[in-house]
Image 1 (cartoon, helix red, strand yellow):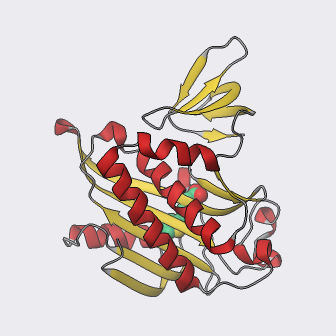
Image 2 (cartoon, protein in one colour):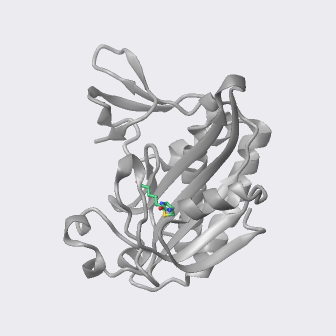
Length: 245
Ligand code: BTN
């Protein structure tokens, strides 16, 4: 991972560049890193702020040998890698909020966006692009007003500035480790670590899937990486996508 890395100063979105690199035949593990994005994208068409000098935006092209059903697991694998890298580097209390947000002290420090290209007829993934946005050295006042209460950075949480290359390196190492574990041993080997980092574990949550709302206690994720909520009648609901409140 990151053997081939393209460093850019300012781009629209590293996701778009990674897609182009894939089309041009770039190898598995290629990373596109940008110092600033002008059109950073989040999940569900939300924008993602990646200001110059203070954030890291990276997109990694991977070519896993998996079926379409297994693809959402990559988000969880990446979340474990990002959580571990940030925790090891900073010693801060890092948590994962299902499915793909990294939180420190109840504020979001990092977001993950995975996109894929698949061959539906043979149920095979051709490639996936994992995008990771990390807030590193932003001061609280740098966040736009509507995000100020919800977003944080390593600087805000630790009171010191972090060399971005150092964090990026740790992220690549952790990503490679967890990606290889996933490929060699399957998602079940990642589950325990994911649950160790999970915010809201065994707590009551509300899951929104489209316009359906499920209320229950979060009892973890299953062997396939699907979120499980137990409602008041003891019935277990499987949540494949959506947001938690
Ligand atoms: C989210 O929290 O909704 C996901 C945010 C993902 C942001 C990253 S930054 C690198 C890559 N390029 C993008 O345009 N988005 C992802």
